[in-house]
Image 1 (cartoon, chains in turn purple, cyan):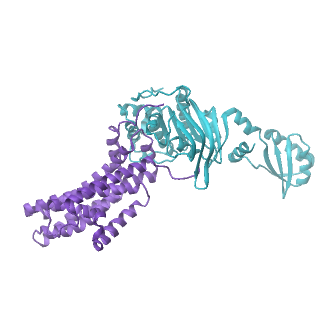
Image 2: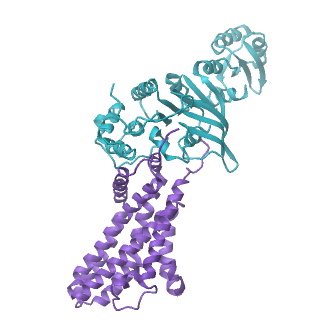
Length: 255
Length: 320
C-alpha cells in the first residue's frame, strides 16, 4: 500500500491561484466587468459636474443602488462561476483532479482567485468613486467609504463562495446566479422583508451599518447577525464545494 | 537519453505481488446503458495497449482507473489503492486524457511546471525542462499552448503527465494528431519508460499503433473484454478468422458453383445481384477468384471485402 495522505498543498495552492487568475482575466466578459466597475467613478464625475458634494445622495444611489445591488453580484457571479465552471466545461479540471492534493485546497485556491479579482474590481470601484465624491466631504465621507468597503468585502466573499459552489453542481450556474441577483435579491427581497436572512445583499448592508449608516434606513439585519450569517454562508458553501469535488465524476458517455 | 526527474516523494511500499493495475468484475453503467461490462484483468510493468473501436468503453475504463468514475460494480485498484476515493495515489499516476483541452494561455513550459508544482515537486523548473526535452518540445516550450498544433498539444500533455516520473501512466488515444515521426518518438519514449519498470496502459482504436509498441493487449468491444494477452496470438486470431467477400459478376450463379468446390472457401451464399463468399485465406482467395472466373467464363464487376472494418474484426473476437 502507499502510505501517507494527499500531498501538502503549500506549493500547489499559489500555482492554482495564479493559473485561475490568468484564466479569468483572459475571458472577454472581464472587459464587461471593467466597464461596470468604472460606473461609480463615471457617476461621481457626473455628480461633481452638476452639483456640490453630496455624500448621502451619491452613496445611496451609486454605492447602494448600483455597486452593491448590481456590480458586486454580477462581478462575483462571473468570476465565481468561471473559476471552476470553465474548467469543468472545457475538461481541464482533469489536470487539477489527477493530483495528490486535498480537494479543499483546490476549492479554496479557486475561490480565493475569484474573490481576489472580485474585490479588486469592486473595492477599486468604490475607492475611485469615493475619492471624487465622498472622501472630500471629510470625516463623514471617510466613514461612509469604510462602510461600503466593508460591505463589499463581506458581500463579495459570500457571493463568490456561493457561486463557486453552485458552479460545481450545475452548468447553468451563471443563469442561476444572475436570476438570484435580479429576482431574489432585486425583486423578492424588497417585497418580502422576511427573506433578508437569505439575501447576501442584506448581509453586506448589515455589515456596512457596523461602520456607519449613510442617511438611509438601517439594514434589515443587525451587523452582528449579518457577520455571523456571512461566515456561515462562506464556510458552508466552501464545504459543499469540497464535498462535491470529492465526489466528482465525469459526465456520461459510453466510450 | 535524458535523465528522468528526481521526485521528492516518499518511497512507495507496494507488496511485490500487488499488480500495478487490477480490475475485478468491474462494470459501469449510465442509466440503462452499459459502458463497461464485467471486466477483470491485472497488469504489471510494461506497455499494454487497450484496443477497441470507438464507443467500446475504453475511455470509461481509463476514467475509472484514473479515479474520475467510480465503478457501478466490482473493484478498481491502482498500486493497491482505490483511485476514486484516495487522491494520494496520484503521486504515482500520470494521466493523458483524450480531450484536447489544455490551458491555452500557458506556455508549454508553464503548463508542465504547473503539473510539477501540483505534484509538490521541489525543483519543478528542472523537472519540467527534463520532461519537455523528453517529448522533444524544447523549441516550442516558451510559446502559448493555444498556438500549438494538435500533435504538439498531445506532447505537452504527455510531458505534464510524466513530469513526476509516475509509476503508472494512463494514456487515452495518445497518438491522436501526431505525425509519423512524432508518433515513433513517443513510442520510443513509452518503450523506455516500460523498460524502466513503469506500467503503461494506452488506448487506441488503431490496430497498427498498438502493433508497434504493445506486446500485451486488451481488446474491448461493446463494453466487454473480448480478448487479452500477447499481441501476436490475438493478431493471428484476427488474421485467421473467416473473411466475408462480396462479388458481383456477369453470372453469379455460375461463379458460385465453381467457387463452392474450392477447399479454401467455407461458404457461398447467393444474394440479389451478388454472391457472398467466406474464406479463411484472403491472399489465396485473390488467386482463386481470378482462376474461377476464367474457368467459369464469367466477367467480374466487383470484388469487395464485406467486413474489413476494425469493428468487424473485434466483433469476430467477441463472438468466436
